[in-house]
Image (cartoon, rainbow, N blue to C red; front, top):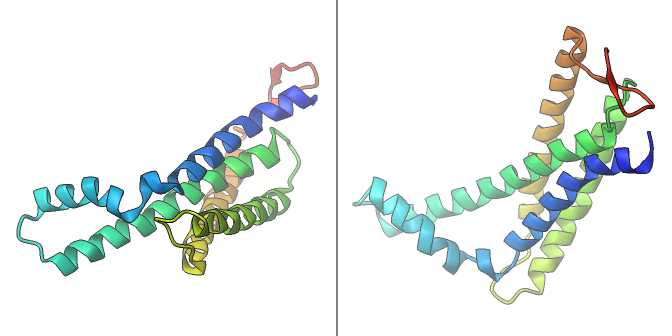
Length: 163
């Protein structure tokens, strides 16, 4: 497989990383997200206390960490696999987790320098949770597709062939 055939698997990874970087800027700081999240919470629960509102808002923000790194983890597994027919899912999964960990740490380092954000090792833990879940799903999905014969073989000519 040539460089361009492999590179196409990395384009979604790069896009996800850009999106995560953007979400680490001032645009997604607590005061800005509260303008959207808190009215939605009030719509569904008009009599909610301020403490409960803050707790739900915090949970939503932490779930966003898990979700964005879950997506990144899935895309990384796909990119490391790059259409390969080999049974190297442990290598793909561990490589994906390593990148997730490095990117999560770098993301928190970036937030350290954004005045309206704070860096937290706890957030790296939430990010890693998303990455681990993604690898579990990827490995199970890959195994299931392989067992069913749904893994498409990529031939050297750029054409898809039977598994």
